[in-house]
Length: 160
Image 1 (spheres, rainbow, N blue to C red):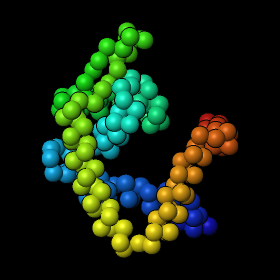
Image 2 (cartoon, rainbow, N blue to C red):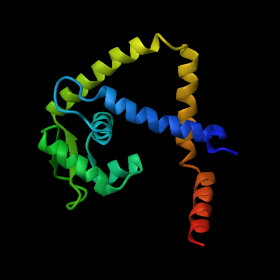
Image 3 (spheres, rainbow, N blue to C red):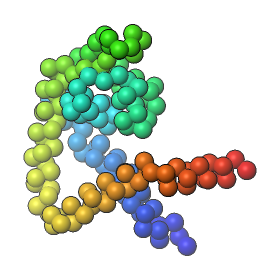
């Protein structure tokens, strides 16, 4: 069997390709320097969840603390986030969105909203809803015991 005959593999493959294409098509957006996917995710998360620590941001994205720290440092340098004292933990400061960061995010979201509305006209709403639901279920699967068992088995088989 060819790898591309597996429907879920085709989803993985197309998701990676689409991720790269979206990054290329939506960057740079007017209103400032380009936002990486990680920087964009940090701004969106802080906009929804308010102030958070770098470790919390990393856990929410299932990436390393170091990966998030690099993006946070770049966002601080651009004035889009700020480092604030954390009364609950001296060594892990809070990261907060600045007004400039809110404006940058709002600008990017306004452009994407316009583009999404225009692009959506080329697809059946039911198809887009099904795609979003399926991707959501796939994302949720990675938080299950079933996934952990599969992952653990794969890691252990790879060490043999």
